[in-house]
Amino acid sequence: MASVPRRNAFRSHFAHACALLLLSALTVFLTSCGNFFSCEGKSDCPCVAGSTSSTTSTPTSTVTTTTTTTCTSTTSTSTTSSSTDFGYISNDITSANNLDGYAISSGALTAISGSPFSFGYSPSALAINPSNTLLYAATDSVLSAGYIYGYSIQSGGTLSILDSGTPLVSESVSSLAISPDGNWLFCLDADGTTLEEYSINISSGALTFINTYTVSGAPNGIVTPTQVTVAPSGDFVVAALGTGGVDTFTFDTQTGIATPSTLIQPVTSASGIFAVAVDQNNNIYCAGTAGLQVFSTTPEGVPTLANTYSTGNGAHSVAINPDYTYIYVGNQTDGTISAFTIGTNAALTAVTGSPFAAPPTVSALAVDNTGGYLVAAGYSATNGVQLYTIESGGLLTPAVSEGTGTLTDIPVTLALSQ
Image (cartoon, rainbow, N blue to C red; front, side):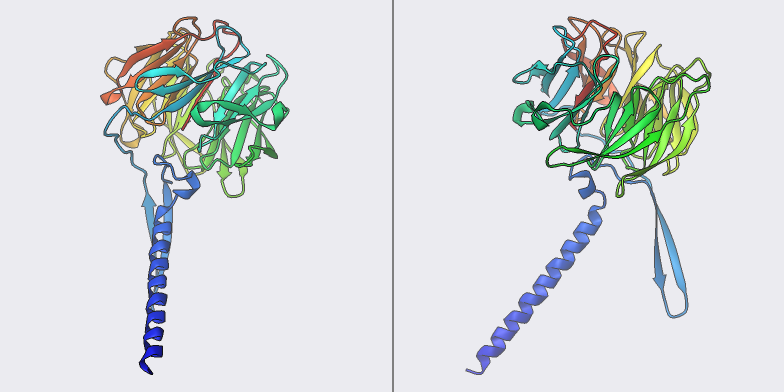
């Protein structure tokens, strides 16, 4: 009988050792995930470019090793997917106060149940959080009273307004952007002088004011605020100000603190930058009067002009696919879309067949989460919304069209699930 306690002790030690081994393996797994959890587990979460250092000590010396991480693009094995994404587009043909909702799948735009959604105001900006559970819609005081409303995205893409329809914030907004971790909302004011930041309660969608940042003025004193975006790395925030150029702000995703960094001036006082996008390596793409300008940056968002590429006239919108292999520019004056492949060091090559025909006065572009489709929105009762299939090499093939608004004084804005 004396052997029984020894067996129990052995089993206890064995179980303890197994638990430690499992904990160790789990720790290694979590450590290796890096940006996985901060990006909410999505397959297209960006890596973070930069440098890390490790120190190894011996009895006689200390050695510090620095490792530089450069994010590389991945290539999709298929340009289409059977999964469904949702798109929300303002400026409906029947009423400027409506928002059209579409399910995007298998080369089709299918109206979401309840679409068009009657908002009672004209959305000037839209933004969807990374987990695709919240939609924020803003108004411009030029069109109506300036507010930000919140909506929960239900199964099938239907919308349910938050806080019983009470505006979450009183703010006149020209553009909205949500940080990659889903915790922070940035609002570029319609007056072109300030950038507001709010923290997001990811459960309720409630917004809490964090800070106001002053944007730089233009050389000629004229600013046309058009777009704000957050770098996929979370390192900085970028605001396009039309003839005011582009402002960058260093950003700390942990604290939510943004710090004014650098102003990119327009080529001339008569030219402007109207749309911006940032890739996984912190390169900034600026679309405007000068065409498409590409800037390399430091992690703080300090830019250096790398190259300039010709586009059509009136470049006012830009979109990059989730793999960071293609970039598209909407040319408002021409009604065309310029397409480029993104190579090493953000070198661009025009896609065969570019530019492609777009909706009249195309004003907004977005690529869906699968990377298989691009949506372009402009002003036409028959083909104001155009869905394209993104083929091999970045080629755009028209899939289906829908009508949208015809009043160019009411801006078209769109947001796709991520």
